[in-house]
Image (cartoon, rainbow, N blue to C red):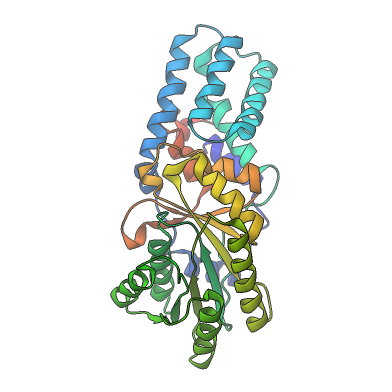
Length: 348
């Protein structure tokens, strides 16, 4: 058993019942993917990070303060963020000194170990989407223009349609030119229904009418598109607050999922966007798009550090089936693939 798998097993929650396992297998099977797909999708990030660490291992013949400074810079380039980088590197240095490691080529396993433990931090990370049978579920999707929000909505709709769920899209991005038309094209392509009212400019009013429409026709899932204007934080806050109030009053509970779509290629800019949306809305999970195009795969660790919001789904390609569940084990193995560790031969 690999050491990452052994680490992972330490933090797993108690086993589910047989009924729970069957239900989860049905619901999650379409979002699950192979290690190979993670490897392909994270190739740019892996090459960038592993190349730097491998160069350090050959540049230094022994571990010293200069090595630790370069190690810190390597993590900064991964775009984890300063605070997360400091915590991770401090933990790595502490372990190096505890184990009395002197050879730079022997620290790769420590790096992966500390990355894993840092993300878990002795807690269960829930990446499951809060969808339940026998009720009308409502997902709210937020994010700035250009991050892949509409495409992510389409991929979500496609996923639940494959589970034979009745899906309705609500086109409530009333501010961006062409947003309603773009969502409508996806609805037609997927053969799912869409509620739109181009005569209205108030997103909350459109969502209210859309929820009424959905209730009368027994939809299983309603996915609401929204505008993502960061130019005026006050307007954004008021708009999202109004939308949340409308949904919560209508369904009698919190919004089932408020998913923030971030573009992985934007790095620190994505963390700034997350900060703004986190301040104005109850974000329950992150959809990280365009991971296959990014060399900044460390943003996942940065999000966890700053906001403690789980990355629930990541985009590993342009196809409809390329939106997959975030898997920490697969992510770390892919991110460090070129560190030349033989995972399967690592013994107990």
